[in-house]
Image (cartoon, rainbow, N blue to C red):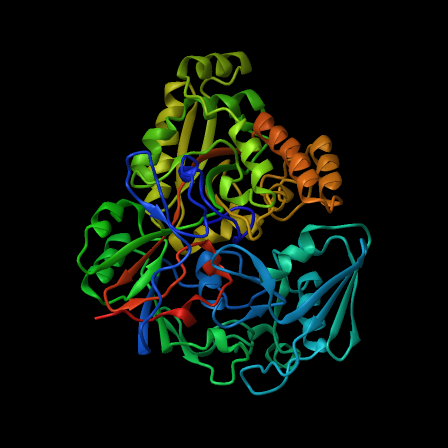
Length: 542
């Protein structure tokens, strides 16, 4: 489940706003819920022959250009790499590019690492980078990341190990997103050979990560094997094989953790947080998150066309009770569509911006008045629901009850677990829907990235919302290289989004991971979507 983007490099969540501890270490929540947030679990004490990792759904692809959700990126993080890298403590560092230069606002130059090998033993060159990046811009690929390259006029090889990107206008987000799927490098020869089978169970993936794809048994499992020719000794895998299993039923997934059938897994079912926190089978840990649970408006032609109706629905939501029911009590009501954890570009200024925001109001009487004023009483709203994750149905029922209380009629449309992700990548899958629960998350420590997806015509703008003032404000922010100035400009975008509510913010919660007793070393936060997290997992101390 997701909304605009996809991963993360930020820091503490809103639930940790009351703490004073730096986000680079563990932080303790002080609201009485008694949980800590830290970027990593204790380091491994030794190697392991294999581990089994639980995913809440089977990846719909292993094509980096199409990967736009948690399951595919969780696997690919260990197989494919980007020009830049996001680390567990939410920083961007050099990846496959050993150096990045911006000689002028319209030019980006990447100097590649020499001697990096793909899994078939061939050496990475600038040709591979050019082919990999250009795939996103080819309409035939259908990449959800294509809009990231909207200001790119050319991607060229300017040396055996140098790639130059030229821009039609300044774009501060593009180089940041080279640490996410848009910056992934695959063998050009493999792409040409595999064609349409690339990234499917019948095709192959040939990247540079610490693990290589061994086998994809569709409907059952995906197995990765350690790649002995990996270029970075700091991330040489401690575990030889990683097997991913797909368990859609939340109860069955928790049973797999408790029985040891699964050694671990990210994004544990929220309905089982209390159960897993007290389990003797392992540890439930919380990490940094850039995600917010939001309601994304998919249709601006129906009842939700009127901003008064959107505001009424927001006012009718009892977010604190939703946090208890949908997030296991671990989290906090969201002040804005983009999480506090996504505001780490300029921490001091960002803190002031976020603290100045009012807490979300819960006012049923005011909500009823807005519905009456808009002449919307009895209007129908269709919201997607699914058994994919417990929080989806919990939130959907809460929205339905809140809407009924203020005179609106919310009909719940069941969506199969395997089809829920399609809502965010296929416009046809949104037909007939007005509202959907999303996890809107950033890939960078720059909140501007989140608000990018509300621009007119952007791929992540699922409801095709359009606001000329917002678009103009975004363009100004995206041309501003100074982090402090850009933070202020992004705050203006946030103000427009809160006024117009094309997305209705619900709550924030930390990232979660369950580690069985025999393993440790995993990063705990949302950075795992691009960082090779499995490489650091090994044996726990006896």
